Image (cartoon, rainbow, N blue to C red):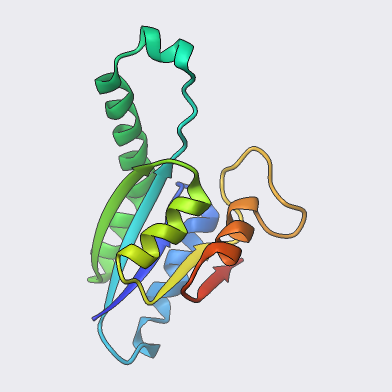
Length: 142
C-alpha cells in the first residue's frame, strides 16, 4: 500500500489537490492510502498561556484541526479511499516535511496556496518551504 500525505488546511486549494489525487488514484501501481494532516500553528504567546490552560489550548487546536479535515474525510469516505488523519501543532512546512518522512509516505500532494495570511508571489509560502524541506516527491495542484 502506498502512503500519500495530503496536508489539509481547510482551503479550496487543499481540497482541489485531494480531488486530483482521488481522480488519479488508478495511476498508482499499488493501492492508495491517504494520510491527511492538519498543522495548527503554535501562535499563543506566554502571556496568553497565563490565562488559558494547556488543556483548553489543546482542545482548541484539536477542534480547529477536525474542522479543517472534515470535508476531506467526507470526500475520501465517499470515494472509498483508505485514509487516516492526524493533527499537529507547529510550523506548517517543517511539520509536513518531517511527518511525511516519519510516516513513510511515498509522496506529498498539496494545494499550491492555502489559507495563510501572507503568501508568496507565485506559490504559497508553505508550499514553497515544503518543496525545499521534503525528502519525498511533492506534487502541487493549482
